[in-house]
Length: 136
Image (cartoon, rainbow, N blue to C red; front, side):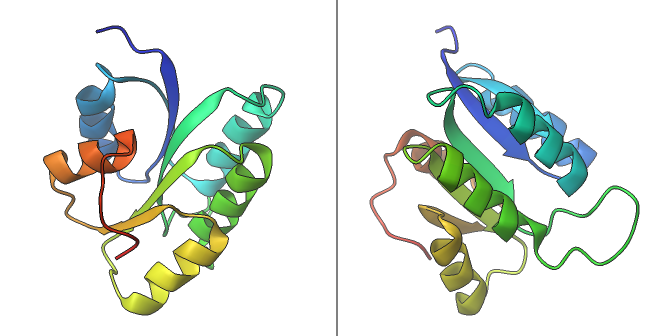
C-alpha cells in the first residue's frame, strides 16, 4: 500500500521518532519534528494546504529547541493544528498519563490521548480512526 495521507509526528526522542516513522510509513506520508520550534516551522510550511494534514501524533511534552521550560508546548501545537485543519485526527500522547493532562489535551483539540509506552496495535487503531474508546 502506498501512503496517501499526511501524518505529522511531533516527538522529541530521536530513536522513538525513527521507530514510529518506520512503523507508520506504509500507511502515511510522515513529516516529523523533534522540538516545538521545528514543529511550528513545519506547521507554518504546511498551513497553505487546508486538506493536507490528515493525522497528527503529538508528544505533549515537546521541548523547545534552545532550552527553556516548554509549558506543555504540545497543547499549543494541537490548538494550532485544530485551527488550520479542523478535520485532522489528533492523537496526543505522553509518559505522564494523568487524567488532568488527558482533559487538557481534549480541550486543545485531541481526539484521543494515549500513555507511553504506546502499544503499536492500539496506536495504529487510534491513528486510523478505529479506536472505539474516547480520550483516556
